[in-house]
Amino acid sequence: MKISRMPAAGRHPGLKGKTMKILVISDIHGYYDGLRAVWKQERDADAILVLGDIVDWGFNPHECVQFCREHNVIAISGNHDLSILDAYDRGVRMPEDGSPYTFAELTLERLTRDDLDYLRALPTERYLTLDGMKICMRHYPMGPETEMHTIEKAAAAHNTINWADKEWKEMTGEDPNHFENRVFIHGHTHQCRILLPGCGYTLLNPGSLAYRVCADSCAKGATYLTIESGVVFPHEILYPTEHLLKMIDEQNFKPEVEQPVRVYMAPQAKN
Image 1 (cartoon, rainbow, N blue to C red):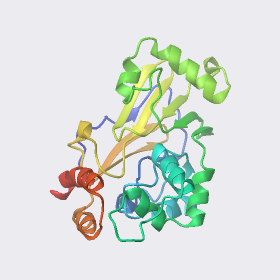
Image 2 (cartoon, rainbow, N blue to C red; image 1 turned 60 degrees about the vertical axis):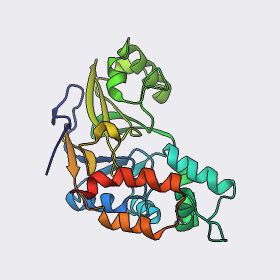
Image 3 (spheres, rainbow, N blue to C red; image 1 turned 30 degrees about the vertical axis):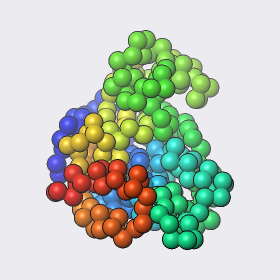
């Protein structure tokens, strides 16, 4: 398995997991190929955490939602999930006259009513105790600034521990000083990261099972994390995208939709 520009695995201060193997994934975006490739490797996981953006921008949104339902994952919604629900509520549908369409319209065409109900029921945040760890889940990065798109920036921010304590208390209603085993997990940036700002906090981002963003251009496959008895492991799995590029050719997407997806997929296709 190839690991490039990925964080090193290891036991981190504040993580005191006991016996479970936890699979942490995010930003599936309807890419069932990536989800299937990861699950083939991690079928022995005891729990699955999904950090949002399950649908939109991929060809198999129904299969991705179905996986989450069938495997009883612990999930939250992301901005793309909420955007798809908003589009549905506004009456957005596939054009009947054969005119070009968007991924949102294609996604809604392929989701069932049960799929939409599942997405609508997802919370935007979760707080849970798992394998002895106190875990806060949120799709967007933690931090005092909305423009803080990476957890590197969050970890380097002034008074990092102060905002971490503040957000922990706001999300959980509990005094953070009572816990040493605190884990913030988020998605959204598509960048696989493990960071330690200190004072018992661990910041995790599993990356994405779909396309890569420019900041991680050398990561060309699905990235995710596993937590195994308190040890965090980053992973990358390459999966072919040539057939996905052919599927784009078969669609009648609007140009502003098609071009970005081709750019994202192209580095993977070269492998």
